[in-house]
Image 1 (cartoon, rainbow, N blue to C red):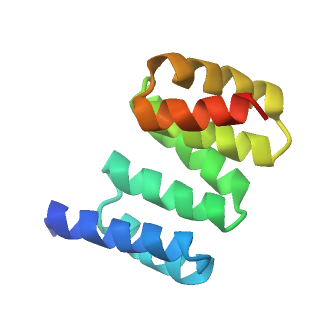
Image 2 (image 1 turned 90 degrees about the vertical axis):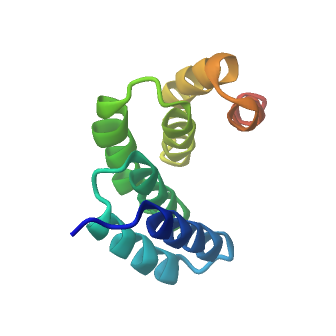
Length: 121
């Protein structure tokens, strides 16, 4: 099966929106389906990790971000930013601080804003 990249992107966005509306259960269902189809794509993996993060499944989010995405792309600033958030939620603030400091220097504008906000807390 060769999934349409645009369809996966749209479904991921629906998963994000559902997640941000505090419907973690539906978000997880959507992102699990997207992941099953587009498992090899980093944006899909990010979406699954974010859904896990919002659902409070920090260990799962950390595993996806650290052991999959950052192994494949060690300089992925969004993954580092979300990993920092997950680590913060797990109480590992010193590990998170290192990530946020790197993102504050090398990330895009949105990533930098999030990293600086966490560094200032």
